[in-house]
Length: 333
Image (cartoon, rainbow, N blue to C red; front, side, top):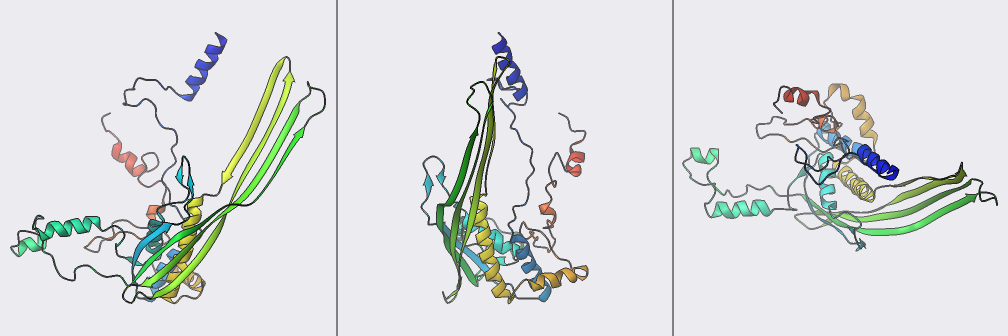
């Protein structure tokens, strides 16, 4: 009975999980309440600086298309699938957006191609401007799609496991079986990822820039425990920690560093000095500090969302944003 009572108490502490749905329609509520945050790397701030520099100096902004940046490592887990991200192209798009480049879509044009097909068959109704001219369907205009000046391609080419590792284990105790015993352990290992990327002139297919980068990733494991007999009871207590630098964040860092170097060449920036100059002149200019990418501008020129606000972890969160809470007051439950 004592055992059953202990089990019941443990279940009560961890929250009720039953085969019957509650009034909210759920068997159990998920744990965790961390808000959505920005996902910067150590190079994101420099990318934003590059964007501010180009805007402040009136540098012409090239149109960039991002193609396939594939995983060429071939490394897979039996249960977890591919070890490195398959979304490196999307990371590159975010990096170019942070740098202020004008992106033109070439990675997934399936929707545009379908709309073009529907428009060509006169299946889509007229837009507002076309309707005023008497057309009953969407018009297809020559030269409506802007071209790219450069395109960015490449791949993740390295994932080297266990470049070097060290470990130590210790056990402490005397020969008396009734005396306490202790153990401790420490392990450290290093792996790395590598990328090979290039920037190609769209019109001439001349490879304008090639960059190869690698980043090492560190992981560690710490453990400790004690075993003892006391008052007729057995105590076996252990604690430990495992931590590893995220592999996918390392891939994002290498891509952002490559994009930063390429855009600095396009803008004619030899080093980080312009960032300091912009900081001194920031009082007379509006400079973005967002590391989430550029903000979307409506066709009428209005700014739909300020890029800096997008980095605020409390923004739009029902538990953190006072504006959202105020909007929900008085709502019928």
